[in-house]
Image 1 (cartoon, rainbow, N blue to C red):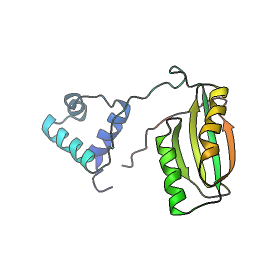
Image 2: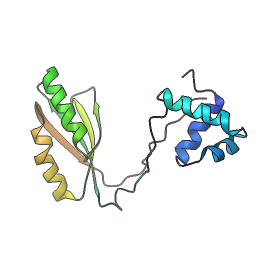
Image 3: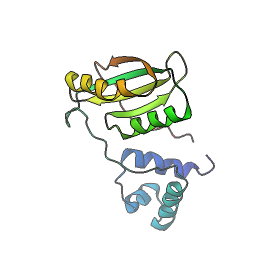
Image 4: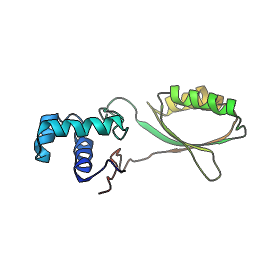
Length: 155
């Protein structure tokens, strides 16, 4: 948090709104010259505060009409099983995120699929084959009311 002063917070807010904003435009919006702006941006990247840049896609328009939240319970927690589980999760493009959670279940996944048939095949092909999984509970999203990857930047 030491690197996030008022100017850096504004840089982060602006880039979360438009990741393609040029350094010249960013500097203009911040009322500063380009070189100090570029240096701040590079330092935010080097320190891992900015991890990368990407385009945000409309999942429905690229043919991914189903979103499901999947809770997994595992019986096996050895290092080997956990590593194998993690590799499978990381390599699967249908899994957008995976969180190790507290509570009754061990993991919460956010997944996407073309349709219900595709989701069913994904469950059979991937989730049922995960090492140590004893329970799979899916909740299908009926309507997405908010989707954002923007983080609130403390000031």
